[in-house]
Image (tube, rainbow, N blue to C red; front, side, top):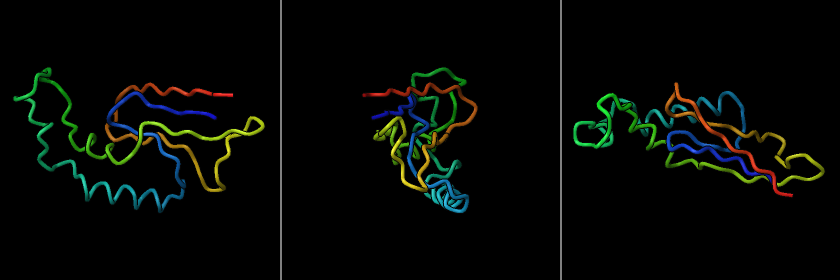
Length: 107
């Protein structure tokens, strides 16, 4: 078994198909459901205990809620048992950040 985990709240790990039109559909859905220009309480920096230059990223947190921070994938004979069209993605909702991704292999 292999576990892929991202230690952040504005990106996700997901197993899905990497077909370009599907990825476009996902982006369209997220843009409509959690637009960047919507008013999110998280973005009201003045009432939060954070530095004044804190990022405005309420939409990123909301998007991440519907994705996971990790996936477990079975392994057999040293190969991940992914379906024919499956790929492991790191989905970034808040660009221009360094990310820590941890991969653990359990035999």
